[in-house]
Length: 128
Image (cartoon, rainbow, N blue to C red; front, side, top):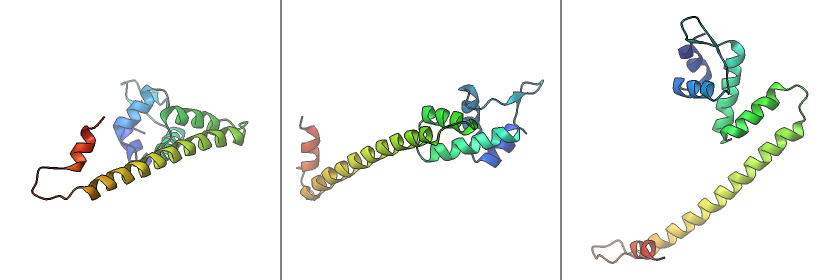
């Protein structure tokens, strides 16, 4: 199967598929003309990677999850450890975003938003 067909089936852009090939996440065989030729198992890997990335897993996490997915002797605890670590990172980001939102909302509330040049938002941004 060529890269265009694989892109349509996996939902990934061809550029992403090429990148995943370059970094070794997938290893399609090459035809004599040098074009990538994908088999069904590569499409499954790409769909796995697409879903993993959609959940925000890093490339390194995806690489580790892919190794575990392909290993029938894996321990589910290893998979759970990666997922829990990622969930912790998400929770930290959510906390940071909520804090940023609160700060920005407070700044917006202090700004009269009128014709005068005085702006508490700019004043706060300029303060150390």
